[in-house]
Image 1 (cartoon, rainbow, N blue to C red):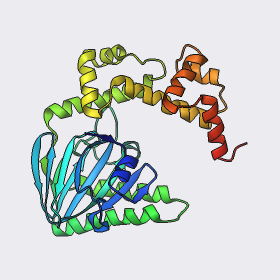
Image 2 (spheres, rainbow, N blue to C red):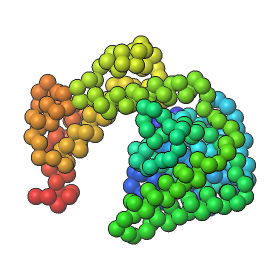
Image 3 (tube, one colour):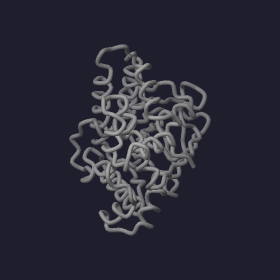
Image 4 (tube, rainbow, N blue to C red):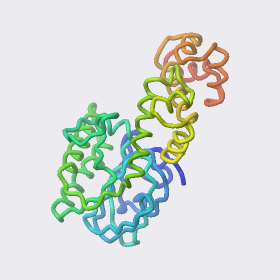
Length: 297
């Protein structure tokens, strides 16, 4: 089973209504596989999937759920799911990057304490009335239009529409919570690990540090991170360091030595070797190509 980012999902399932790596709209009316008709992946983003017509069978955390017209499936990132739609089923929905979703304001008091703005009532199946189904579909389609709208404030427009979508869903009565207690516990551990990693990744990249902070063994932390994300603890930390290195190379005037020190490497040579392993080019080459791409001489 994969661990797909939003752009990777868009490519695999031929989704064309996508705004950067932030949000995508999918619909079975577009043909092809753009409706995630036979999805069997662990994805790195939120998913809202609304059944307009027909039926679907989904398996989440080993439990089977049958969806009918008006069923809305709302899943958090990294939740393993298998989805099979009948050929005559019409469905539409949104895929939302985790960071983009968390940037949207929320008035829901049912939030995760370690990462504010993450409603725990995701991983839920809602059953909507006909009017509710049409209203939510209308919001989805407004987001689709905004994705293609040429406007100076496109980002703000999409954020506002997504905020409306979140508020609308927060008022819906849910039919079935599909998150098992065991998975919820592991997901909470993983989210706290991400929170700790975001604060400490520059200086702390040993699994023992994070296990001690969480009060669990390194073996259990390794197993939880692998199960939830599909990656190892080292992979997660290395990826975060690499992304920050790319950001510093592109957006600052820091020297290679300064970046190496900022990211906790013992010297510039160690940083260069690390960066080459991930980017397949040196930091200087990456910085030069980034400047050329942005028109900076």
